[in-house]
Length: 321
Ligand code: GLV
Ligand code: GLV
Image (cartoon, rainbow, N blue to C red):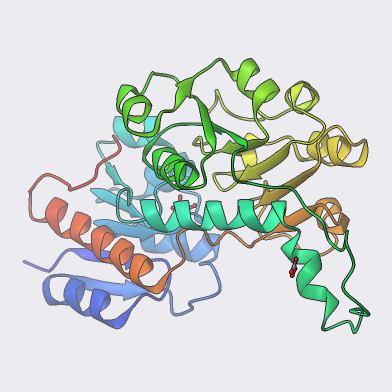
């Protein structure tokens, strides 16, 4: 019997690929910094028993219809909005993600982005290289305090809770909104459950941690930004699709909110021509939430282990469907 065929849509660490190659016939898109083109992905999917995919790959009906042998898609991300879950289910394909291993790393980046935005670090980083530091001055790059302020976390999953833990270390008051109450977060971190509307009105820092679904698409729209304090700082490290970017731009330009920090955008990648990037109040990162060497390797290992389990007839470690 020939070995099951695994297609990996990006070059990964050698040892992860070596592990898979011991058991399976493995093929890899040879680039680390260039996504697989659609044609190649569809072609390879035709004979694949397993796919190891990135969040940049659309795993949709068209792909599933061609992939007759496909048993598992292991997405190298905690989010899986790039995959048609319903359709995967109807085709009996297991979908897995990489939760847990990236929780603290993503929370660190989220809190770092919050601090960077509050304390205007983007502007501060430009002063010395631009030879603009002439003297110390009382209001030079004066930003907003983080400690003792109110943080409002929208989406209290594992990463939301890890952000709350960091916020409690900064003596912040913690509000959250979630589909269900999280009693443990309330007890451990003193977080208070509030309605979405109340959170928008009360929080100094509105932090979006909710996954992108039909219900959360454009959740942060014109009305949402208008409900926020004019001093509010908005942070998003989840998915760009949760935000109406035009409404966000207007809210910043009109002074309806103070600033924002974004690690994610609706149509990634973006460049300097994106309207939000032109604004001083916007601190932008290129989707690096879980990007520490240690965590990215753990994510790769988990994705590979999910494939190994499913192809060996065992239960997947971290299924989403
Ligand atoms: C990254 O955005 C992820 O979903 O892991
Ligand atoms: C600032 O550096 C201060 O000494 O207040």
